[in-house]
Length: 82
Length: 82
Length: 155
Length: 155
Image (cartoon, rainbow over all chains, first blue to last red; front, side, top):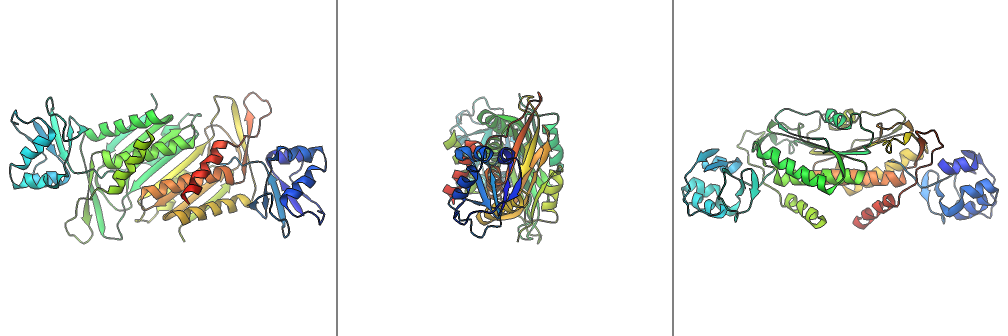
């Protein structure tokens, strides 16, 4: 699965994108966040405090969204455009 | 007293301004309107239907406003600027 | 005193130049809300609008409206330009610019100014019809009077 | 389909040219509400903002917001330009233009677009401080999230 990271999450994880093989047991965005946060201290810091927002295939999704069929999953902090 | 008229009131009365000696008995804008409307059919048409708005010394006033001290009294229909 | 420009004129105006003048050399302005009112051709039936105004009072009344906007919102600059005379479809009639640190104040003040310009500034529009018939004075809309209500609720 | 222009770019934009493009040859537009967001220097403490964005999604998300605005109001044209990259105090960040026959729709749509751009378009601002210290990512404001609420009440 292609994962992309932006802003403070990108800085904490130390990369802007990566390809990861995800366990078949992961069903939702929320489960994926927990799995990533358990990888190491940098991922843990990136996903701490529940600030991460997610997009699947460039559309906003909630933590309960299913990741089946996703081509690209993005994680980022609350947006500050405009 | 200097009286000035705008838009449809100006057209109906047939002049944009005039100097008139007002009877001392006239106290308010509302009384002045009634007095003007009684002058002839053109004034009557201008002030018909109660559409006339008034300004004293270039400030909006209500019909109950006193005309004492006025230098210029203006009458006009509802405004359509912007 | 914040920068304020109020003009009643027959000439057209350059909204971009007015906006640039408002922000020139400033680094504290975060938001400019602007409004341009244009003459519509009413599906081809309108040849032109003739805008009559009350010289002196128009400028004073716009200034009173701007005073009130400055009391209500933390503005950093206000520009109002209102044209009079003959204006053809597609041409500009009115410009309002409000600058502030943040967007909410700029937007609210611009809407407030437009709402009060519509119903309180002494301007009157007469239509010249495309078919050559005698045009009518544009009637004031109840909706414009109603638009003022929300500001008194907020006060 | 109404004229719509959505751009995410590092270059500056010319608000006047965009406004002129929106009204070019039109005689049915009576109102253009516009908003320009600028970089403030935060009382001299800010050297620049660095705007990061999600390529592809930024344009798509702005288009989805514009779709919703067009569903809600009778618009005659919409332009949204959002810059990315390094932006210094006094420079322009974002432009929204909404054209309509009447002012209420134009104003509401412009405010709606700005509210949703702030909290839904995938842009993030990082500060570069004037004193050379490491800047922070600008925190999202509760007020910006709250600003979205009123539109759901209206829906």
